[in-house]
Amino acid sequence: MNRYVVMVDAGYLLRQAVEMLSQRASSSRADLDIPDPAALMDLLLAQSRATLDLAGKELLRIYWYDGVMAHGFTAQQKAIMQVDDLQFRAGTIDWRGHQKGVDSLIVSDLIELTTHHAICDAVLVTGDSDLAVGMELAQRRGVRIAVLGVEDLAAGVAHHQSFEITTRADRVGRLGRTELQAVVRYVPGAAAAPAYTQYLHDARTPAPPLDTDTKAQIAAAVQAFAAQLAMPLAQVVDPSTHRIDAAVDKALLQHVYGTLGRKLAEAEKVFIRQVFRDAH
Image (cartoon, rainbow, N blue to C red; front, side, top):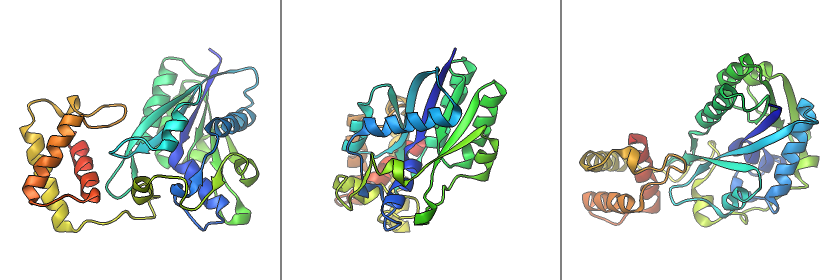
């Protein structure tokens, strides 16, 4: 066993990249274009090999962790999924546009790989302190861990990596403007479909709000629908993509539509599906 893995929190990487390339004019991933996803992955692999001195070791694969909207993958996500030696691991996007479930996926995958002795090294492109425990467990099993951050102090963009993970890591690497501008571009408003630009925001950019009464009515309707299902929720929500079965999704929206007695707004549909998944 002489293999390594690269695990990428796409939310962290792409948010940092767009802030850097836009000179902090934007933090929206909708403004970031990835013309050649394979070139971006090659960059991440090269920086990973340099950071952990991985010459002579074999890549297991790249794990790409990203939130997926209720209506499915974006064109950018679909292009990334076509890259060789890459596995897309899907979290979800909640009604506020916040990414959910990615940290737990990274930790569970890291522990699974180390438990089965599938890797000897791992590079994590992330900044989240929630991964510290998973890193420590992997290190106890003999795996070296590096964390790779994105930083351009000249543009006022710090790496935004927690003290917990940078101090636990065996090595820390950095990606800067020079490397990233060769493979991604800042293109305001041009890189994503309308639904993506409307809802998939950084946590600091709130999605269109729903008032408290509407959310309470929707939550009650969704819970009533879930209670009437003749099958367990685990059978109607895909565990890998978190997509709801098409027939159940249609019935769910119709049920809430009937309860509210009016047409549903797109933001309400997103919230309905998220409440349903949370019940799962």
